[in-house]
Image (cartoon, rainbow, N blue to C red; front, side):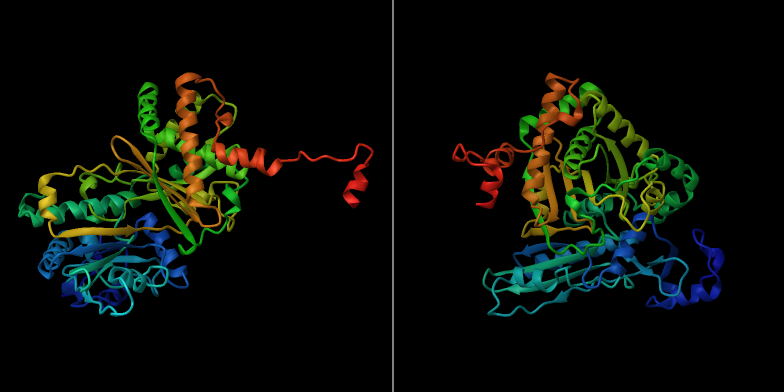
Length: 493
């Protein structure tokens, strides 16, 4: 069996290169299903994987607890079924000695859980696991499939088994995780046969690489970013090669009345709720860096143009691209419509590369164009009796994700309400960033409802307590001086 150049439709390789790649896969050519390039954001993630001196900001983890070893084994079996169904979970990455990195789909991959022996005197077993496999110092080998790892341990004190699932962002995004959960659940309920046929990730790679031309992407981003000559670096945060260390995380719920009000205003204006969130975040950014035209990264789902079935496909579909929002004298009504038009315009370009977009601005590399990220995602899930019985005896303890950006705001659209999760360097304060966005959302909603002609640049962002601290506490200047004292004398004194 030999894989020849004419068998590979998404990449042009000579025979010696193919043979070299095939040699990296256990079982050789018989175990190679396909070879193709990386999608745009995968390339960026690989760059950060290779650049990180230790650890990896794109290794995500979830922790689980199981009543019995049998329940853990049922979990492993369900996950293996999902791996068997989906190409991306049987994929490794090769880059050494190649002109461009490539991904190799294996035909068969076994998930081999590792056993971890906790130390009896080292405290909570789940904490020991999290510490041992912390992505700030632990890495996954992307040259082996699957790009995930499952480690389990016996927790004698709580009479249970605990496990940690490490998975790489190269293989899974937020939506893909929900698909994995849905398919595991179907297997646990004995309904796996009813699942639709799995959608190959290669379809998306083909769409991303063969869709809109680079020239068309360039025209769009040059139009949006050509006039931007100053980077948007809130609080002076300029280091975008981070590894996730020193990052603090806080999650808060958006006030229900504000959430409902934002949705009704979005309907009135015929725009998405995401557009209002983007504008409020832009207002926070404008205040944090003293600029009127701000640029930040927005996470595009990549599934809009991803082809048929992309909503149920596994893989890395999302892409991070810069959006420029003006927060100046225009009215809040106009600003919302302009932000919405910009976001919808970007959907046609969601497969462009970040490097191309940055090149279209007036900010020359290596200076970053932006250092903050907004990730707006739909996270509504219905909890049913069937779901609870499928996962009986298993529970998720925690999950953790990071990026290389020093400031990230994840906004979860829960169907009715919203939740905010800020990840930022601890010296800035994650709670403080959540507070700013909360105030900005409230003031945007109130302005849209009561005074839609309000200039967007006048929307308050500072919470009352911080405003009082700045204007009154730190500015308390009431002191009595002798009436005949001269200023220079006071200074000398």
